[in-house]
Structures are given as structure tokens and as C-alpha cells.
Image: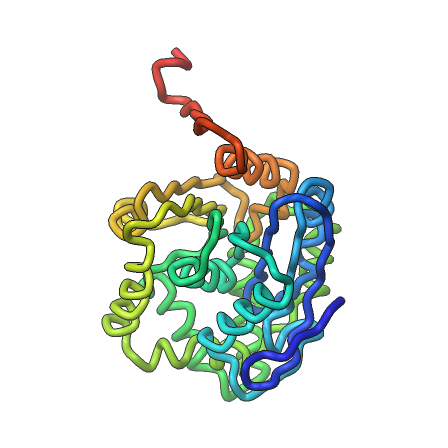
Length: 282
């Protein structure tokens, strides 16, 4: 692993798989670390340069009293600058999905893939409030977080992969509150206005955006997102749970490559992905 210092001096570790292809930045979710991406990294490294950081307070990166999303996003910019990658493909899971979605509004990016993370605060508030309400009781927080985690895991993960994920997870009240509390303190309406103001950075820009959801999603979310990120595409992978990219990494990487191929230098036309309901399938 390599290490850099964030803007406040926090040491941020990241893995760089090298490679000659287009750069990909993989950003994990709350409580996970860069190793969570191993099945995806292994499949991408042959054709792409894959970089995966540990967010501050996660994995080998330093813990700090500043765990807010603004600081995490600044760390990601520092990794991008340090590695010298230009217009990377940004792929984020859960909190990482929110980070890459907002990062691409101000940072040059070839594409964004957001995994199992809606950008509407009202869909996140119930879970966050439940965790915040027991944050002062370590045992209660652990049991509440575990119950939520189990409920969202789904049934399709292989037992060995489930054990690997559980072995990597280190979720604490400090991480949860540090990341979300500054946004929650604004209130749902004001916090949502802030997110929407950031997403306005997509206006007039050509950034391919894909949301992959293994968990249920609000039916109105697609139209809401489409009004803020032109041509955003959402897919529901039924029954895949919170980690659809780890339930079937072959399918996930194939979907990434399908998304990225028309964006590659020299590609003259976009792929047309047939939907099962389209006339061509009749």
C-alpha cells in the first residue's frame, strides 16, 4: 500500500494495482476498507489501473476527530492528485457511492457508478436516527448496527464471502456520527438542498452515471435523479442485497466494462443495451 497525507495531515493509505488501462477509483462504504473490493480489483486489474483507498478512520488510514464527508472527499481528491490519474472512473459503495456522486460534480470523471446508495436524505434518515439514538451505549449500538446489517445483506452472498465481509467490517458510533452528523444537523430539508446544490455541478457535463441497487429503492427515485443528473441509469438487481457487486463480481465487472467501452478513447458510437421489454426481444 501507498500513503499520502490529507489536507489536515491525516495519513491516508491506498492500494494501486498498476496496469496500463484507464484509471478506476474504488471507494468503499462506511465500516469497510479497500480490501472489500478484492474480487472486483482482481477482475479489473488486467485491463485497468485500479486504485482503492481506505477512507479516514477505516482500514489502515489514520483515525481522526474529523470524519465528515467533506474531509473524506478532500482525501479522495488528494489520492487522485497524488497518483496523477486523469478523468478516472469513480465507483463507490454505500457512503462511497455518495462520495463519488458528489465528487464527480466538481472533479473531472469519465463515469460514476453508485452502488446501493440513494442520494435522497429522507431515505437514509430512519436508519441514521436509529443508530444515533443508541450511539452512547456501545452494546446497544453494536446490536442495532448488526441487526440492520443482517437485514440488508440479502440471501445471495456465498457463506465464505459473507464471513470475509464481516471480518473486514469495523463499524463504530464514532464513524457513523462523524460521517453523517454534520449533514444530519442541517435537517433533512436543508441537507437535501445542499446535496442538490452539489449535484447541480452535473449540469452541462457529459458524465455517464449508473446506480446499481440490490436493495429496494423508492419508485420515484429514478425520475428524481434523472432531473439532477441527465441520462442517469438505475438498475435493480433483485435479491442481491447491500453488496450486489460481491454477490456476483463477474456480472458486476462485465456491467462496468459495458458502461465504459463507449467512453474509451477512439470509440465512435455508444453501445445500445437492449432491455427485455424492447421490441428487439419480441
